[in-house]
Each structure stands twice: as C-alpha cells, then as structure tokens.
Image 1 (tube, rainbow, N blue to C red):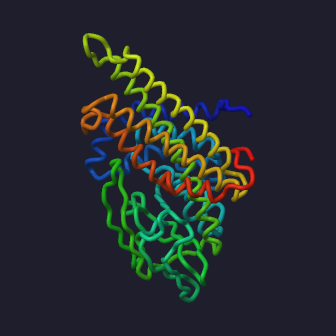
Image 2 (spheres, helix red, strand yellow; image 1 turned 45 degrees about the vertical axis):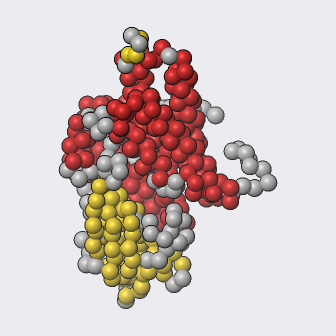
Image 3 (tube, one colour; image 1 turned 180 degrees about the horizontal axis):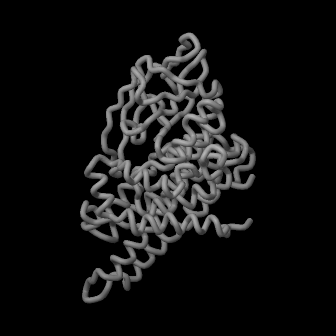
Length: 371
C-alpha cells in the first residue's frame, strides 16, 4: 500500500499549513474564543482556500476531492486548533450531493462550497448516548411538504448555522431532512464548549423541512463516519503539536541546573507519547482509506479507529500536562488549549467506551483489522 501523498495533496497540505501559521495564531484564536467561539471572517478565509467544497462535485462549485484530501486538511487545522467546524461542510457536502434532489443541490451546494452557507448535522439527542438509531424527533407530512418537531443537542455552531441536516422519525423509520435556521419554529440557544468552540441546543417546533432521503439512518451513519474520520485526522494534528510543545518545554525547563529533557525517565515518557501519536496516525489513515468501503466494513473501521484515537488522545494529553507541571493547565499557555481540544475530540462522534462496544459488537469469527 502506497502511503505517499500526491503532489496535489501535498500542495493542499502546504496551503492550509501556511494559512494556519500566518493567519490563525494563538492570540487570534483566543480572541475568537472570547467572542463566542465562531468567526465568520475565519470561515470566509477557509472558503477562499476552497476547503468548504472539498467533498462537493466540481459541477456544483466544489473541488470534487475525497477522504484523503479531507484528512490532510483536518490534520493541519488540528495543528492550529482551529475552532470553526469545517468537518461539518464535508458532511453536508457529501450528504447533499448523495441524497438531495436537483433543486436542493443547486440551491445549497454552491453556497456551501463558497462559504456563503454553513450547514451542520443536528443529530444528537439527550437519550441517545451516541446511538444513531435512537431518535425521538418526528416529522409529519403537510401537503407537499413536511414539518418537524424535536430537540437536538450539541449542534456545532448551531446558532450561527444557516441550515441543519436533521434525522427524524417518518412513518416509523428514520428519515433525513434539511431545515433552514431562519424557518418559523426553529430556535437555537448557543453556548461555548470545553475546547473554546461553539455549539447550541436547537428546538424544532413545527419547522418546515425538506426531505432528503427516507433511508435516513444509512445516510446519517455515512455522515457521522465522515465526521469520525475528520475527527481522527484533526486529533493527529493536535497531538503532533502537543508533543512538539512538550518537547520544547522540556528542552528549556531546568532542574538541578540541567534541562529536564536530559532525565532518562522523562525521555521514556516522551517516547511513549511519540509511539501513541504514530499509532493514532496509522489508524487515522486507516479510517480515511475505509470511508468509501461498503457500509458494514466502513462502520467497523470507524469504530476501531475512533477507539484507538481516543486512547491515544487521552494518553498524550495527560502526559503533556504532567510533564509541564502547573503551567500545563493555565489558560495563558497554549498547551492547556491542546489538552482541552483533545479532551473534547475524544468524546466527539462517540467516546472511547462507546466505540469499544461497537468494535466488540461487530467482531466476526476473525477479528483482525484486515479480516
């Protein structure tokens, strides 16, 4: 298997890395966090790079790229702990391109690709506990259209979004709908999250909805799997930088007159961190390469990858804090922000315990990764 990136993929990585380095410094990020956790200005800059249209076909105004390009982009955004939820555009682009009718595609896909519209997945409910087949929201047919009732939690940038992709019960089966935030009957209450970004509780009270597909569970699983692969890639970028700042600190922090990086026991802990980062990287590659696999194989792969990423994130984040000491948890120091990001990513799209259960439930007679 060839793990080398193509010239186009490397150029994409370089462009995003350059923007993160020069356009999204730590102080800018702290300012965005203080202002609420989402910046339309930053969102427009990501759109100017073409990133919103990564999963959108070229004839709809996008770049027509795929999972590996998405992985490359999210890894670099992770290095900058970027707050804006670009993975949601990947999900929206893929689901609308795959399930919406021609009019809906023409109305939304070019706007998502150009950054004029932020469309996010609103699927989590309080009783679901990460299960995608648990859905209490309900949709009703009203003439030639549909109305939707229900509440969705932890919707990324929900009070800033222009529309939502919402699973809801229709005739005893989960279907997937598009609902505009400006529609009557939609109310979003925003709040900051642990990593400094923004989410919202969104209530749908008879809101007008556009049906995308009656096979909503399959579409939702696909969208969440795109989110899982994106989260894994983003986490690799965050862990890379967490390790880098930890090593830099150890090379400058002195104890007994020498840098603590010279202490053998601490060097062993850094080596363990590096091993976890590389293990996480390999599983992130695995997740991205399996995104276009058949549904059962894809779902199994995402659970395996997210479980390993969760274990690695927890280990790297905690070791970094311990090796830094008290400064590792101060808000003024960037290391604490990496730790917060890793903590939240571990619970995004299902925590480690949930995915361990998914791995167990999906085991067959042979349980190897390549079985």
